[in-house]
Length: 486
Image (cartoon, rainbow, N blue to C red):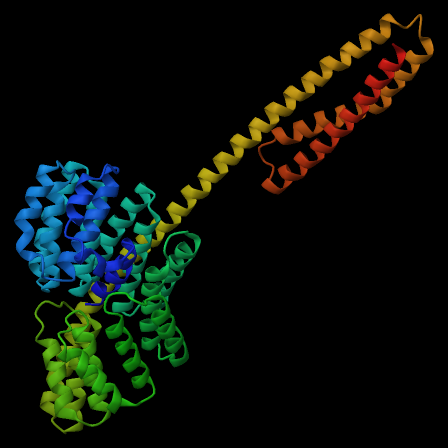
């Protein structure tokens, strides 16, 4: 459903020329296989090529055997998993979700056995997409959670970005709009902090945000993010259809249902699969708003006839719409029957949502744990720097102390001959050199205290630096007087 459009927007940035460029390069596969890049980089390039060739188009379906032979010929790491990925993408393109789910479970077992972490991430993400399209939010969240853990383990920000956008897509699908916005905002921060191509990733984020604000009925926000999607998604896959969908969203909020119906029917007529039930539901709503009751019921029944979808808000609303139409037509028996079906759908949906809420909480805990570990790593590095600085400062003090003793000894040896000069040096030592030295020793004791805050340590280091400079200056004065003496 929606997950394919989001995924393709994210993948457009994977290659410099986007999807179209790869179709014009007949030797792309061989070029990647001959590349001496690290295994994971080569797998990423191959995965992106497969998404292009098998999820977007059917032009390469008859070359599956050739690709399998090429993978084996070049002893490509994860060749078995890559072959499975191609098969899975074809199943997803054909919207054969149950077969795709079965093959993904098999692929995950093989990737776990072979230790292919990146491809395991891809399988978990695809299984999450499939479960999202089946309205199985519980299973989808579980797989997104596994994918995020792998991305965090790999330290791969683009993979984390994909997972966050996917999770937001799921939350949007089940109506948890505020949670979806949290993940989208985090994804946006990640994109803005990277130096890589941001266009397609930002387009995916803005597309998701536009859909959320449609569901929240916020027209101005919808229009803003629609324009941002157009700006950042220029040249991306299926942009025209995505913008047409956002346009009819705006028409629906504005109560301009007649024009909205024209756009929706055009989308449904031109082979749309992945937004099929969403578009059909919005068509049913617009038809009902125009009091075309029989047509609205027809669209609602087509939604209910979709055997691949589990309990969902769309199915629940379809039952309620049919019951409402029956009420409007004074058909109480039919109305009661569909209200009862709506109630049963609602109960099943609530049961699943309770489990989703539990997993969602665990997902949030994972995010908190990851943030804590990152902060703990920073704290550990700061401690290492701090103790290293203390060690250096102690060594400097020791060296200064040795220099001081040397100066003192020289002044003692020359005391009888240079009594006046010795008194002057003794004065400098006791009143000017010892003062910064004492201050430095005191500051070092404060720095050794582990209970200091970071801000306090910064202040102590600044004071220590001042005292070292002062002592250095005084020692220079001592050195100059000694030279004068000689």
